[in-house]
Amino acid sequence: MDDNRPKDVGKVQSPATDKMWGGRFGEGPAAIMREINASIPFDKRLWKEDIAASRAHVAMLGKQGILSRDDADAIDAGLASVHAEFERDGVPVDLAREDIHMTVESRLAELIGPVAGRLHTARSRNDQVATDFKLWVRTAMEEVDGALVSLINILLDLAQRHCDTIMPGFTHLQVAQPVTLGHHMMAYVEMLWRDRSRFSDARRRLNQCPLGSAALAGTGFAIDRFETAAALGFDGPTRNSLDSVSDRDFALDYLAAASQCALHLSRLAEEVIIWASQPFGFLHLPDSFSTGSSIMPQKRNPDAAELVRGHCGRIIGAFTALMVTMKGLPLAYSKDMQDDKPPVFEAHDLLGLCLCAMTGMLAQSRFDGARMQAAASSGFSTATDLADWLVRAKNIPFREAHHIVGAMVKAAEGMSCTLNQLPIDAAVAIDSRIDAATLAALSVEASVASRTSYGGTAPNNIRQQVAERRAALAKEDGV
Ligand code: ARG
Image (tube, rainbow, N blue to C red; front, side, top):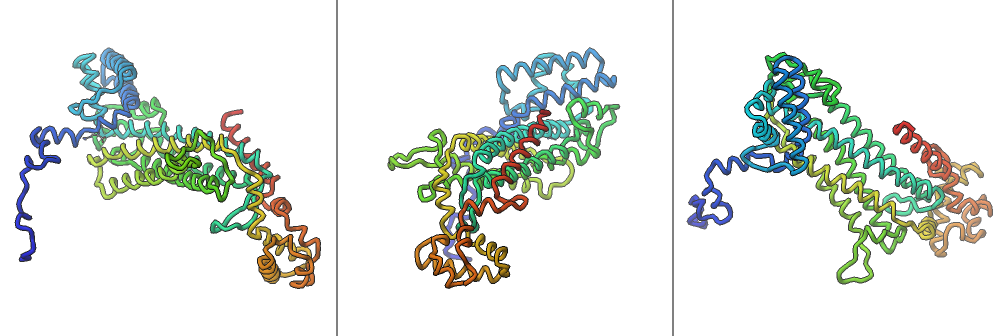
């Protein structure tokens, strides 16, 4: 026995004496059960999808003769009333009604009476929730795509305006080679274009309807799952009822794509933050997207960009949360899966906010071309051009040319000048093959104009890529 152990360590605290949570026991276990069990506080967001899926289901039940025409019509009219009511007044949150499915159905029963009980023929909340959530995530994917296109359009505008604006390109955040701002903007267009393809790929994979899988095993009623699938805009029904009610891949696909998209936005946000800092001064943030400091009057803080950078962490957290919830769950449905919705809702709200903030911020930002060009001229950014020139004009092997330029950089550093300011005799002393034409090859304009390889930074390349992306967007719109 450890004698240093506090004497009362094994004593069970009486719940009633615990001020934090003991009081809850006074409500009795049923109230606690109700609280942990209920999802209505958050799944009320599925109300439109829930009613739409129920209407498709009841129409099919009527058509198949599983319900009488009159009953099916009465239920459908009742669901239309519930829709109108919820649209007008919002969804009532009553924990006793547990979730959106029971909230809709019990309101329906209040409106149309016992015939409402026939709606739940040949289905279960397990296939219902999978269907509702798929419909919701599908719309979410479409919304993200629209927001991505808006941001891409702003980036294309900037790229077009700044095809010839020279800035330093960095590796290791050290000045590497001159590039154009247009080229830099188009790099983000590429990332966001891949994001779009991830969302559309996920949407295609999602688009099979689980409705009619019932609790897990299917149903003995002569339902037509192809009919309900088509009515709800799915490509067809899911193929395996067990998988249908236990699958949340579509939500994970959404969160994975959202995470990667948020990651891209966080990189752009970080660059905006760096560019807007005083030592850089590449970018002037609009008043509408910066905040002041309560103590330092000169400050213009890039809060929106910082929050885009920060929210990325929460979106990746949402993805992780659902991955961990789903890990190791046996087939088919388990109540753990009710926790699938909050992370998806949160990630979607945050991603929408980040995309809109980035779009608004960039649309109104001003770039300082002169400062960017000056920065591009620093740090011997055209050293590679000089080495390339020696290879091309003097037939010197690249490794040797690299060595010669290294010596020139060292000399220029010693004289505190740039490479093209190096006195010609100092340059010739390093290698006799260097002449005045060599140094002329060293302007940042000549450097960017020379990089005409496919995907390179040359202004004409960028103009062409902007035009190609614009044409692709116009084609999607059917223009
Ligand atoms: N509220 C539940 C959820 O979101 C609906 C499914 C409940 N099914 C069940 N067998 N308890 O997952």
